[in-house]
Image (cartoon, rainbow, N blue to C red):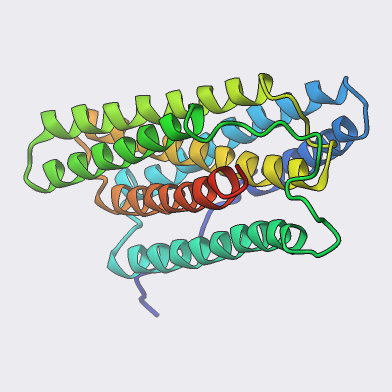
Length: 254
């Protein structure tokens, strides 16, 4: 019976990324419990996850570009699957914010954040990061409209600016962490703060990688319409989460 779908070849990426995510969790738990050497496992696992994700995305692009497997029905299925993935991400960050306000609104804590926490000024690096991430999303949107209008040069420029701004955002986030006066184990506030902002930072890395792959495909005269649409959707989701995070965790707590 003829149909528009294709059978996937055996792939090592799902198994490999599962093992590395497990080692990432083990390393993180070890580091939070005082085993400083576990940080090396965290960094190694994170690098491996990025490498595996990159190769997995390359295989998906090869199925579309070189093998011609992504017909209309397959593309619609990929788009629907990605929308469901975004829904799970919304639920993930909803749980983070729920845990934060569960403690912040608890009458046990007469003062929030707890005494001894020297809060980060929201009008310094957090505000700068807000502008960086918003302008990064605007640049990516400009690149998307330029590609629709067959302006490849402007599309590459806008996407490149968006990628660079996203990288600067992540670097400043790390700088903020290293210069903070509290760590994740100091209080329930610091635990919720690092958990939420850290998860968001990892999502920024994934979004930048997706935009980078889109840039590469445009550079080599491919037509990454579906990849660009999904990457832009994901990146705008990351923007919205950061605005909520800035208002609720940085500004309101300060």
